[in-house]
Image 1 (cartoon, rainbow, N blue to C red):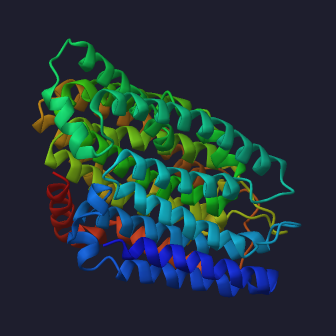
Image 2 (cartoon, rainbow, N blue to C red; image 1 turned 180 degrees about the vertical axis):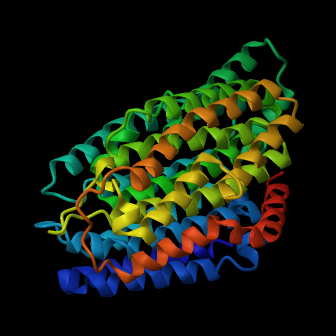
Length: 478
């Protein structure tokens, strides 16, 4: 049942030895070997890894919910590995080293433990494995001051969030006598509302959700996101915005609906507040951004707010809508960040200013069309799949009777659409800026085309099987 994590862990250890012996000359070979390891882990998901039930006396859960999340995590991690060589090759003084794909594999192994956690200890070990690798990845460009700053901020604030999470876990354990999700759920169900034990459990619930909220970059625990997204290497930023987001959200869903399912009314209030705050702040704070990576950081905050709208429903339909949104969000976000990789001056220097996109439709029409598709989809404009994703979470909220939340989410979507449409306006109506460097990486071009097709109306062909898969995964969670 734990075969995917075993494949990733052993693969990372072996590739670490190869990197130690081969040095920088082995970087490209290690990178493609890491992609092969991720593919092997994906194949290992078949069978008991997604239908095996409980392992290690409840510490680990192998079900369709975890399997779906892991497919998204492995795919996003593989993309973040294959786009790195081209990026680092264009960065003067900061070469890609073989430790990069190894760290990616270790982070993916930690994420797999997170989404399969059946116990608070498994949750924490997986989260820390992912976090420690991420801190190093954020500061991977040693000679870049912004990258060093990003890694330091992420580490300091991440340590604080870990302490908050541990305090919450200790409170929950102190009042329940167990760290198993099943035992915690039974304790919440059997505690009399208003009693001292009930109050203690609610305090534990609040601190646990605060720690997880940091990993999701949910308001008010979002403060690290814009700086880290801007300072980290762009392939790493794409990894944070995709794979890390999936693992944190899937973990939040499992904790909320598994360990703390009987306390629905209590955690629902927290989730509703976080959802509304994230949607509003993500929409308003992105309006005046001039850096494309910072804008995408606020876009991720806005989108995780919409994801939490589905979680707030507290139903199987809500969990299915969260998974559906994550699948579409991965394609939109990864595609947008690969377009950012194509933003290079004629001398090959990376460009991040939104003004650099001016008139792109006349200098690189194909790239402009792909970026427009991603922006329209992120804004939730039909017939692109981003509209279906937003519709799914809003329908889940309406079905659960959360009408004010659904209305607020729709209003927030309208506000946030402004800065997505501003990007399209800059590309198609502003005077052309100097043309980007020609002869981009073929891998990057293929990924942009694939992501654009996936979220375009052609992607509607995938709606039925994807909806069925997410519904089955949500049922396995319950």
